[in-house]
Length: 212
Ligand SMILES: [Zn+2]
Ligand SMILES: [Zn+2]
Image 1: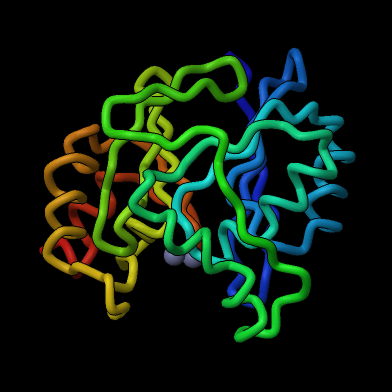
Image 2: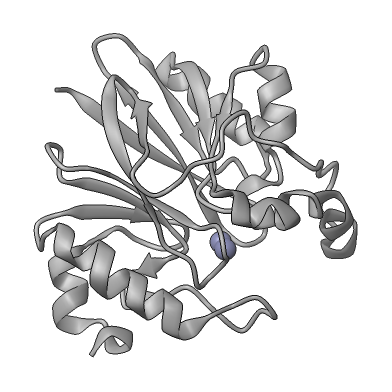
């Protein structure tokens, strides 16, 4: 399966907006369009990508801030994710955008909330949904076991984990989700995260100081 991925860094937070597509059909998804839609759309045009849906890993502004506008620009493609527990974040995007100085950030309501055990089709493949709260209550991880690929949002990074110093953050829950749901997927699983470079679960299991 010729699955392809490309990263478009967006927002002042350098968030990894991810384009994922099937090279044969050029059909695929945009994951976490936090903002800078001109750059995202340039990436889509470069690939010739036909966007089937927008995926949100969680409700933070650098991930979801551009979702409503991108949906509109793409003719109303559906938005799937995150878990409903992040609805309060998605309902507060406009106010947060004003506070952070983001231009034109809109609140967004997904067409589909995701829950543990759901499956999401992306680029012709089925991805399983893991609900991994802690960084935010509604964070989800998406994994395709055959391709050994996971999209982890801000749950896990190369050498770090998502911050939990928000009023709604839960460090213990995040560590528990990583150790009981994500790491067991297997050492050879490659992950794309919300910030910074990709890694593998094995590399993080062996060397990530937060998982020692
Ligand atoms: Zn986040
Ligand atoms: Zn982030």
